[in-house]
Amino acid sequence: MMVFTWKKVQRLLLWLLVFSVVVMVSMHPASATLKELAQASDSKPLIVLVHGSWADATSWQHVIPLLQQDGYTVTAVQNPLTSLADDIATTKRVIDAQQRPVVVVGHSYGGAVITAAAAGNPQVKALVYIAGWAPEPGESVSQLIGSYAPPPLSTAIVADTAGFLYIDREKFHEVFAKDVSTVEAQVMAVTQKPAASTAFDQSVDSAAWKTIPSWYLVSQEDQAINPELQRFMANRIGAKTTEIKASHVSYISHPREVAELIEAASSAVE
Image (cartoon, rainbow, N blue to C red; front, top):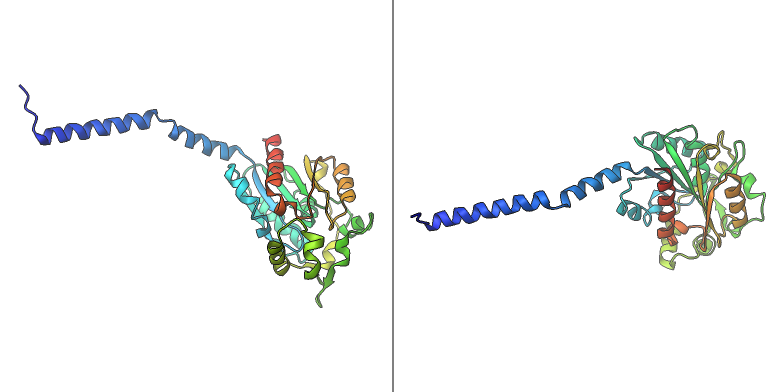
């Protein structure tokens, strides 16, 4: 007859507990799910975000978390806005450093930057323009602006003694970010990053959109770039075009919709 001491009972109970945990871990799908999630994330294109004038990389702060939550690896370029050539070089360096297929997104002036910076790179699978400039080779932003009725923003630009352009703080909310909260628009006005005036007169040497599939989000209530000019550029580059009832900074006022468009472009080229 086997005699069970308390110590033996404890050992038996401990053994049973360990055995149960091992069985549960081996049968539980969580470990497989984590692995699958990691593999899914690795299979997604990388996202490179490029800001425009009067902003910096942190202006994407509402879009970035949404993309990351859906498993995307995101890099936001910090451009100097000292010249179009400088901004193209900075953005190109970031794009070229990516190790997997890339979707490149440009807002406003950032559209002109990505047009040149992504050209000739086989890793770039899609371009997404958020109310962005999409020039032809040899064409400047200034030339595009002059082809349509000037937007209200044109009356709000002020220059400093070094030739860098700002938006009048008193007009910033109205002409640039009308659908953003007053508090956030005030912060944007105070922290705006000026752009060298010469950047708008410089042109790109090549256009990535000629060989790379493009998406375009038109801001219907834009007072910085004429919506009709946006539609013209979107049509000219053969972009898959979506429109949104938003100001120039839809990526701040409607980050969910912008993130969804970026993800749609990403899914189309995966």
